[in-house]
Image 1 (tube, rainbow, N blue to C red):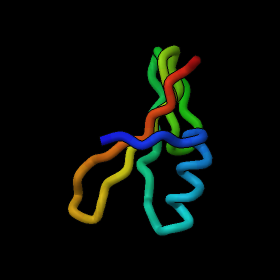
Image 2: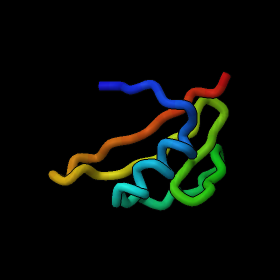
Image 3: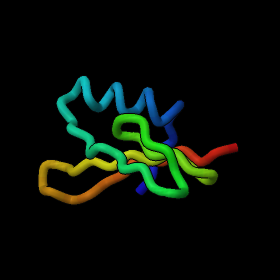
Image 4: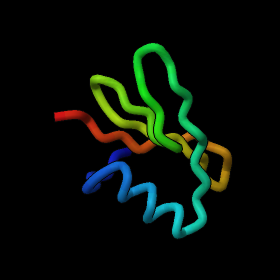
Length: 63
């Protein structure tokens, strides 16, 4: 399932206001991390769990 959004950061802000808790992104050799968002050469992603514990993510592909 997918949903088009304006940006990863604005989506995270909107969901945090509704009580969603995001996992902290981890920095690796191929990405950089800023709070819950991991950035690499392909996309920006942020992970969170729904109320049933399913892992979900928000992705914004780089242009």
